[in-house]
Length: 203
Image 1 (tube, one colour):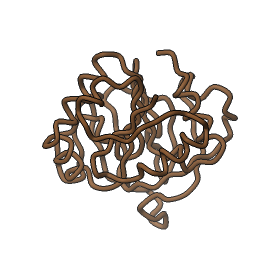
Image 2 (cartoon, helix red, strand yellow):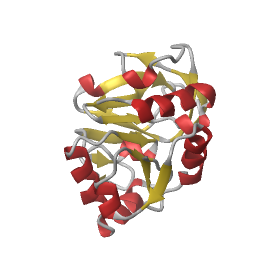
Image 3 (spheres, rainbow, N blue to C red):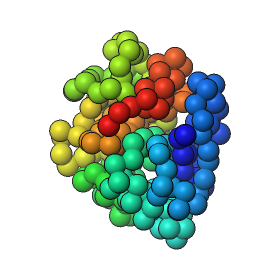
Image 4 (tube, rainbow, N blue to C red):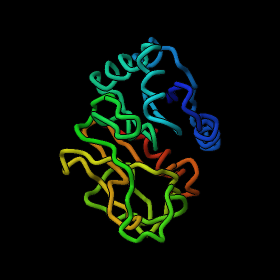
């Protein structure tokens, strides 16, 4: 069973639909007790970091997430979910969950013809191997929609980079935590394979 965290930050049905397509049991919940005791967690998100953190803190979900991560629960952050796993976000100048050290910054491509938000399909440049990419063609592209990016303090946390006028961390991870800036649930067969690998990941 995979628990999908509901904190009013969108994209829940797309993730649930992808998991259901794969035959993976899942539930959407915003109940802190269920989150703290979950077997596996997907932490999706679309929207603004400041409002997301307000929802997480006021509902007790932030504390439940930290408890689950400390317990070693496999944890997958997606898009905004990835960003607010860091210590601080420049989007709203807000302190975040602090599961990774680092700051979320506004994308500023050197090529001014490149539009923000970064929207569309892009490839990855892998920095290290990870079980969640097992069986995925390294030339695969994934679907991005974002204006901010995660800049982790410890570069050893970076699993893969992508590029939108400048390189940025597209995938980070450590221990039982894994996170992608792109949306695996919208990334075709490669994204579905990632979700299947996460469901089977032995941390």
